[in-house]
Image (tube, rainbow, N blue to C red; front, side, top):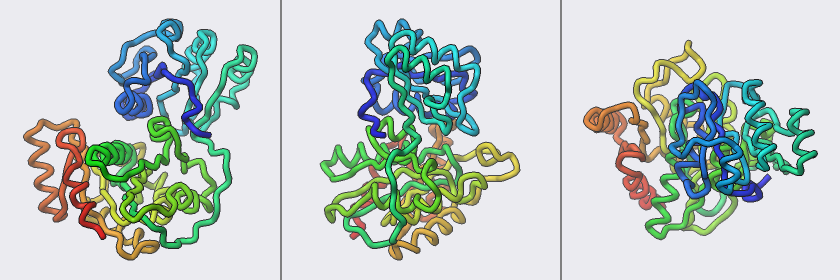
Length: 338
């Protein structure tokens, strides 16, 4: 399924997200493509904000919205019963629905029936409709960067999008390769690899990042973490299929535990870098980590600067926060890779 088929502009549904990370799809689309978003719909108790006007589906339709993006996520990726009224209201207002959860819109009988009756379209961007090959590990032309992380939901997609924007601003050849539902809606295409059968994940990434010009960079969006007990498998397959020349380690200070796993602490940043490089060298013996991308959104500017300096001293690598100082230093390092 290609996201460019989805009619624009959008109403973003943040549902009852308990924090901004639970609404990262809506927030990501609004942040990288605000021109596509007319407003947001939030349920009582929602603790996230995409910084676009609040409105009902009817109001959004009057403003020109064509599709409501279900831009909230939860553990398990299922539609909450509390969301059903809003989904029905969107269809009644004349909007299509698009979502990236594990559960399909098309598998909710009452939603599927109403969409058929009203002539609306349902888009389940997490679910690929094509077949993928088994990975070969064959060296491909062109260059590749993969964002990896000490945890999930830690800034890998944001960092990758920021790198594409910076490289295009410099006139460099770069393509953002989306591997998750938010990235697909931002990029207009891609594959949600956590919905691909495990034997084919690495082959899927090889196919979506094919041979290219020697000076072209594929910027592959990372998923999960090698240290996350729930998602390490998809991370490892993504590393092997991406065959990265460069890795960027994404991290956030102050997290009390891995997201959704209170019994697991985040790894040491040096340990995380070493393990990711070790696995990347299976398919690219020259793979190396070139930078750290630090999420300092909960820190003061002074504390953030101190933290980045400490990580640079610890790792010997440039450490940046894309939202505060940009990713120019990372691109500078990329340009030195031959």
